[in-house]
Amino acid sequence: VADARAGLEMLTAALQGYHVSEVYRALAAGLKQAWDAEVDRLFHLNNPGRPAQS
Image 1: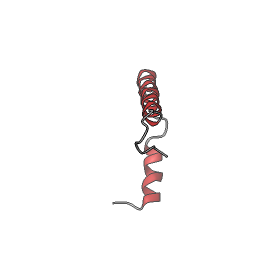
Image 2: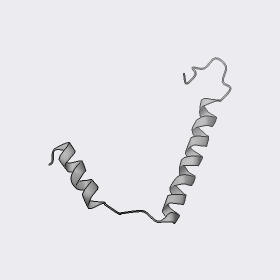
Image 3: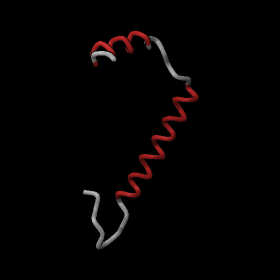
Image 4: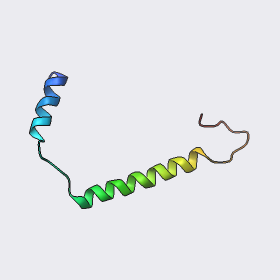
């Protein structure tokens, strides 16, 4: 158990200099792009008479 600020400061210090691999970074970016495209598709369906995502 830790104070939130103190815990985040300790975590930041412990992770100083840590980076994920380029392969993992590219995978995450591709998955995010696919997710965003699907969300956009679903929010712009032509469904007259049904509630909109507004």
